[in-house]
Image (cartoon, rainbow, N blue to C red):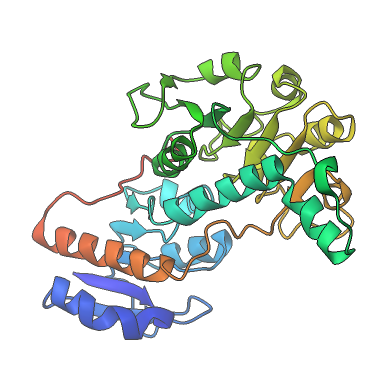
Length: 318
C-alpha cells in the first residue's frame, strides 16, 4: 500500500497514517502537486487545495490509483476525466463542514429577521432608530431546506432550536430529526409559496445545475428570503438579480456564486437586500483536524479491508 499525500500536512499526517497503516509507503507532493518520488505504484491519493486541471494531471501520473480522498463535501470539480475514466473509489469529507455552515445559515436568517445591517449602520451614524426598525421573530416561521444531507440536517437542527418549522427534501424521502415533512425528488417546489426562508444545500450535479430559476423565484412569497450555501451554479443568477431588483422576493443571503471571486463590478454587490459573503461559511479552526481524522480513519479501514466512510457515487455526483 502506497499513499501520496500533501506535504503541507506532513507534520500532522505522517505519524498518524503510519500508525493507522503500519508498513505503508508514503510519498509527498508539494504545493504545485509535484511528487517527491516515483508514484507509478501509488494506490491512495489525498487531494488538497489545487484546481481540477492540476488534479487531472496528477491522477494521470498514477496508473495504480485505487482510492481518491477529497477534503471537501462537494465533488463537482474532482470528477475530472482521468478519474471518471477509471475504476477509482472516491471518498469525500461530507459532514466536517456541517456545523460552521449551519451556523452561518442562522447568521443570514437572524440578520434578515433582526435587521442587523440597519442596526449596525445606525450605530455608525450615531442615529437612534428606535421603533422605526421593523423586526421579526423566527418562532413558527417556515424554513424549506433543499438538500437534507449532513449540512442540511445540521441546518434543520439549528432552525428547529429557534422554534422554526422545517420542511426539507432529500432523494430518499426518509425522515430526518427536526424536520416535520421530508419531500422526495423535486417535490420541494410545491412548498415555495409557503416558506419564509428557502435554503439551498444540495450538491452541484447535472440535475441540480440551474434548477433554481425564474419559475422557482416567482413561486416564492414576496416576503420570503433565499439562502444559498451550496454552489452558485444551482441558481440562475440573472433571474435572481432580476427578482431581487424588482422586489419579487425580500432578499437573499449568498455565500456562493457562479464566478468566484465575485467580480467587483457584479450587480449583486450593490443590491441593498442582499448579504454577500465570500464563500467562507465553511471556515472554522476545527475543519483541518476533522479532515485529517476522517482521512486517517479511512486509511485504517482501507488497510484492514473494512468499508470506507463517505463513499461517493461519482456518477450521481455526491
